[in-house]
Length: 131
Image 1 (cartoon, one colour):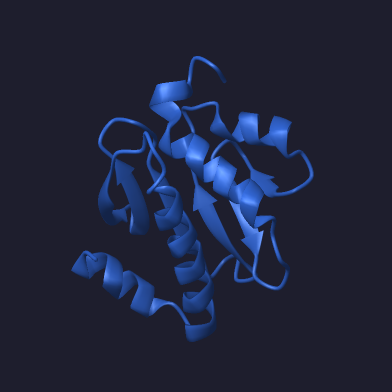
Image 2: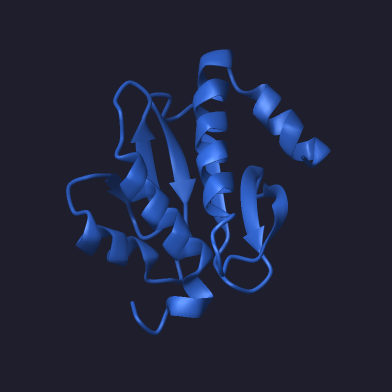
């Protein structure tokens, strides 16, 4: 893990860190799927970001003091990803604008559905014509 990224994870309060690291583990699990050319994790805009070589779109995650009851997963706002997720899962996630899904800390969220969203993002450049 990149030192800057590790420091970012360490900066979260311990209860938040556990949830953010669980989300990170989920994303890293999805990066192992066929067709995803994951090259690593780095900070972008001060947020842990998951980068592919060319198969997909970068995903960022973070916890913000201004929304302390949730963690967020961010997608590129210039893609059709959020609108696609809204069509697929209209009532399963809390969407904000065209780039963010907020995941509540005190409620379970649909992990399998989130895995699919992550997969679509990490394969976006391969499938964008189908969306």
